[in-house]
Image 1 (cartoon, one colour):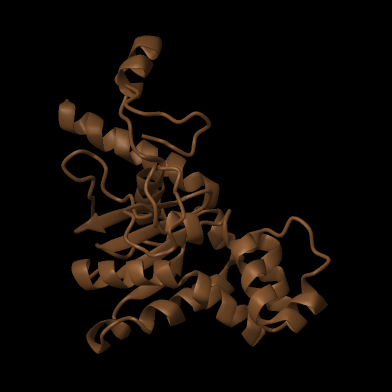
Image 2 (cartoon, rainbow, N blue to C red):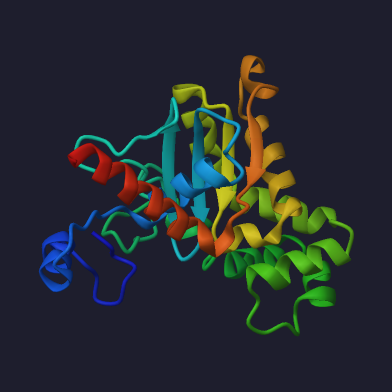
Length: 242
């Protein structure tokens, strides 16, 4: 299933089709799982045995590494962090559910959500710094955030927007006890300013026993992560079958 592709892919047998075309064994892996595997083999997760990977882009993807192994679940669907309909905003997601965190915390929705909050809560700040900006994206947003020395109006607004995602990360930390949380995808290009917000927002939702034992890292491999992870996955799968 890939609802964010135009017209969507549902129950499409990519493996069979690809093997027919290429006349070679084909192994299929979710793009975010591949990126996570790349990070844990050659990137920011290299020194860890377990972790959570959040991919912030058009949607919100995720992956779980436990004891050095990618957890794919009974049906290969593990890591759909952006979905589940467990929140309270009543917005319809591309997956068909209401109340998914992807609908409010993905890199494509955050700029507009931020402008709405600034207009309603910090109108003077909005009029001074944002009223003339068109096509606000994550890169520009965090450039402004950094250039203005992390103003409290922007900081509070971003913490509010990401709150549902912070809840999700906190829940999984308590459930799975990972060593590290890795943030990747286009949304992570905001860099350390974004990482600081995540550390603050998530740690405020953790019990004392977890506050200082979970590391937060940005993905290092950027656009190469998926390609590197897919190569490792194909190699590992081929060794299992030979």
